[in-house]
Image (cartoon, rainbow, N blue to C red):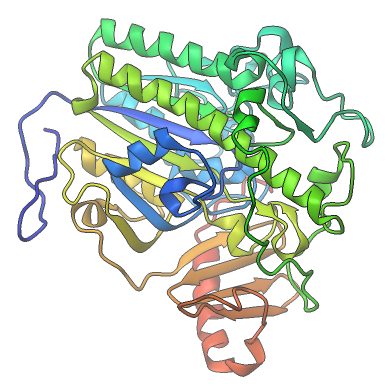
Length: 475
């Protein structure tokens, strides 16, 4: 039975007899809440905005880790995991060796419950979910027993590794020193000029095939943009030519101990100027990022349109999730890989047919690990033991606030973020405590840990408790 949502005075759930619902899971790489529906007025994102208007937008969604692989580990397993990018591969090694009894992945669970599970693009860490030098070795699956089909169209980029860091018409990053690939690009051509156009086309084919086959399905589609390099067809860039951008908030490097870094991933590409020193170039970077968001948004629109055309929209749960945030100059960072809000906050939108108060945002503090138990609830599938998250069905029924703190981590530090605060603790013992006021004028620029010793002690104990639930797999 599919648990639809009704508009009731009590905002409670009601059940309506229906076929077992489908799931469309859309993962977007490096997508901060740089969207019209999240209040960023200069960004053109009509299709994701349309999804938000029919569903629930979570404005305080924080990922478990500010890096692709670790964040996707949390999404797909529902567990706190390693801080590095290779946790899923190490988990797969442990499963094959019979060393551990692990919680089944979300697709594996649905597969055992009668779902056809299909992945297209970058859903796990490697697009297509395979290992090897070019990420195309079928003997090294990233998620064993999870997918009926795990696909990555590569076209002129030749292999998944090439497509992951590809620019127009088959250009592949060669991983040489900086200067080998442009950081910004807008080439003429249609959507297939860049890899996400191919991913969208394959996802549409899979959607048609799944519809024809009948039976419930999980279709997970992972788009690469706006991941570096910032390249998209020129028509998406044209919308931002000459657009005046708001100032970058708190653009200065922190003077205190923090998880600040030198933006190494960004700087490995060829840039015309230093974005921290040249305001005009910084705006060019931001415009290209926005163009990549609009390009990804257009691919999302194709999927939503096909759901409507096939008559599947009323029987499909749609989840759109950004795998982490991305700094656009805040704290003098251009990238992720730190524990500030800009790297950890990302979009999460859930559309369920019949949802109450459609289009209203939820202010609740929620985490990526919550997606797994939420889908179990919505699909009426028994959740396995060991999940770290909480079902968001209450927030889908009524977009209320909560007092919860969300746990996140990276390689040498961990953090809790809750209403009005962020606490960070380094492996060295150094601590950061930030107050988030209503106007957030200070954001995370003033470390007040010395002023709140009792709160720091309380949060440190809670952080230790959360850390004890992490699965390490050798990371």
